[in-house]
Length: 401
Image (tube, rainbow, N blue to C red):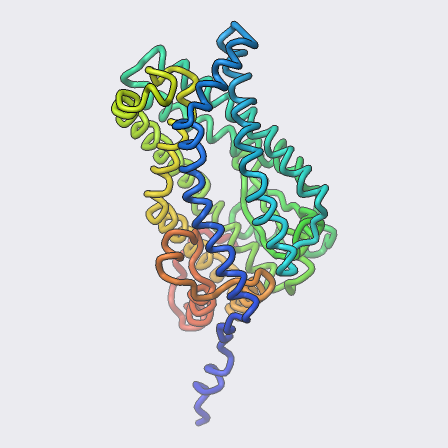
C-alpha cells in the first residue's frame, strides 16, 4: 500500500517569510500606532492643562448665550484645534507612508477630502454625545455615568444601523458586485448559512489603496457583507468564497451584537473612570484647567483623556475578545466551504498584498492586533479539516442543505 502521508504534507500551504519591505512597513506602522496611543491621551491633556479648553469655552460663550448653541460652538472650535494638530500626523501615516511603500492609489485631494468629511461627520456625532453627557451631568451628578452607559446601547446600535447607509458611502462608492455569477454563488452560500435578507456590496477602494479586505457591518435591515474591489480582483473564486464564509460566520454567530455589548461596557467603564477621577483632578488642577465643575463644557478634554486611558489599558482584553470572534469566523468559513487550501492561500495573499508581518512581536500583537496572526490563521487552515476525518463540525448545525 502506498503511504499518502508525505503527499498530504506536500499539500500544506507554507507561511511565507515576510519581505524586507514588509518588515520595514511593520516597524514604521508599529511606531506610528504606538505614538497614536500616546497622542490620544497627550492631545486632550495638552489642551486641558494649557487652559486652551477654558479659552475656547469663553469664546463660545461670547458667540452664543443659549447652552445648546454654546456647546455646539465649543465643539466646532475644539474640533478645529484638534484637527489642525492631528493633520500632519494623519498626512504622514495615512498618505506619505502608504505611498512610500506602494500601497496607496489615493490622490492628495481625495485624502484631504476624506479627512474633511470625517471631521464634519465626527463633529456631528461628538455633539450628540456631548449633549447627552452634559445634560445628564446636570440632572444626575452622581449617576450620570450609569445612565449614559445604559443609553450607549441604543446609541451604538443606531450607529451600527446608519453607518452602512449614510456614512460609509460618503467616502467610497458602494454598489452590487460586477461579477453577477460570483454574486449569485455568494448569495447561495449565504442561504446555506441561514442568512436571510443579507446583501453583498462591492466597494470601490482601488481609488484609495492596493490593499485587500472585506468586512461585515450593520444589522437588521442594514446588515451587509462588503468586499473591496481590490479583493475581488486579486483572489480566486474559491478564496473569495472562503472570505465570504468567514464574514457570514460573524452574522450567524452573533458577533455584531456581542461587539456592541462589549463596546458599551467599555464606554460605561470610561465614563465611570471620568466620574471617579474628575473630582480629584479638578480639585488639584482646577486653576490651570479654568473650571471647577465637571459639568462645565470646558471639561470635555478631561473626559476624553480619561476615556483614552481606559481604552488603552483595556486594549489587550478587548483585542483578545475580538480575536476569539475572528478565529470562530475562520472556523465557520472553513466548515461551510470545506476548502482549507483556498483559505490558506487567501491568507497568504492578504499577507503579501498588505505587506503584513505574519509573526509580529508578542507585546505588539496583544496590544495592537484584533485578528489572529496570519501565521496562526494559515496554520489553522492547513490543519483544521474535520470533514476529511469523519468528525462532526462545530457549526454544522447552522448549515442548511
